[in-house]
Amino acid sequence: MNRISIQRAMRADRRFIASALFIALSFSVMAFAEEYPAPRGFVNDFAGIIEPRAATEMEAMLRQLRDRSGIEIAVVTVPSLEGRPIEDYANDLFRQWGIGSKEEDTGLLLLIAPRERRYRIEVGYGLEGDIPDGLAGEIGRRMVPYFRQQKYSQGIMLAVNSIVATLAEKRGIRIEGADPRLAYRESVRRRGSGMVGIGFLLIMLVFIIVMIIAAADAGRRGGPRGGGRRRYYGGADWLWAALLLSGWSGGGYRGRGSDWGGFGGGFGGGFGGGFGGFGGGSSGGGGASGGW
Image (cartoon, rainbow, N blue to C red; front, side, top):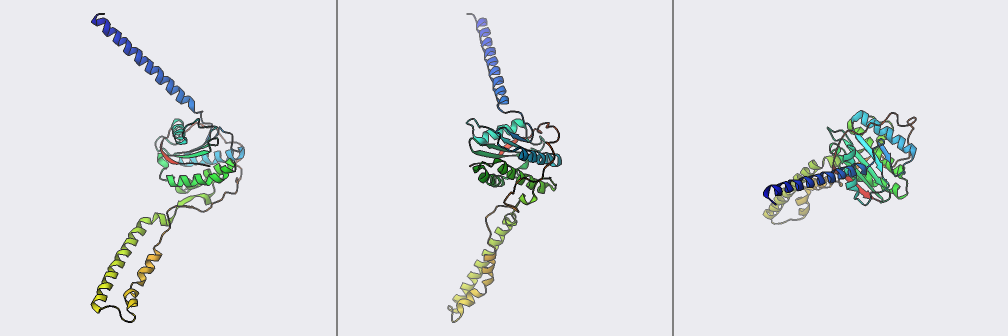
C-alpha cells in the first residue's frame, strides 16, 4: 500500500469516528430531552398525590407570583427518581425546563418523590438571597410530618404558601391565597449578630481592663480589708449585667405562623389561561433536600 492510499484510509477512519461520535452525541441529547415530560403548568403532579383543589389553589398563587414579580416556582411530583440522587434529578429538570427568568434566574423547584420518600427545594441563582439554604431546609422539614401521614397535599401546600408569602413580603406585593403569617423573616438578633459580636468583644475588653486596674490597686493597698471584695467588683457590676443582657440565641428564621389550617378560599374554576412555559432560568445547585 503506497503513501497516498494510507493517507486516504486514515482520512476515511477519521470521518467514520467523527460520524460515530456525532450519532452517539445525538442519541444522548435525545435521551436527555426525553427523560423529563414537558411542564403542564406551575403544578405538575406526575405522581398523582396532590388533591385537585390544592393543585388549583397553588396554580393560582404561583401564576400571580409570576405575573407580579417575575418569579417562577414549579411544583413537581414524580413516580420515581429511577435510581438517581434527587439533587441531580432536580438540577437537571430545573435546567431543562428553564424555571425562572433567563436574565435574573429567579426560579424555584419543589420536587417530591414519594416512592423514594425524598424531597428537594432547588433554588435559582437569583433567589438564593431570598431563600437561602437554611431557610429552604426549614421549609422542607415542615412538610415532613404531613408526608409521614401521606397528607401530601397539606405538606406541599404549606411549603408553597410559606415560600410565596415570604417572597411576596420581600417584594412588597400581595398574592391572593398566600397567608402573610407564614412569611419567614430573619430574626432581628440574627441580622444584628455582627454588631452584637463587636459589642460583646468591646465589653469583654473593658471588663478585662477594669479587672487589671482593680488587681493593681489591690496590690498597692496590700490586699482587701473588710468589705474589700465588694469594693473590687462592685464598680464592675454593670459590666456583669451588660454581659448577661448581651446574650443571644442561635440564628434562625421566624415565621409568624407555624401551623396551616387547611385550604383557603377558592379561586373560581380552573387555572385561568394557558401555560406558555417557563422563562429559561437556571440553577446553581442551591437549596435543600430531605426525606421522611
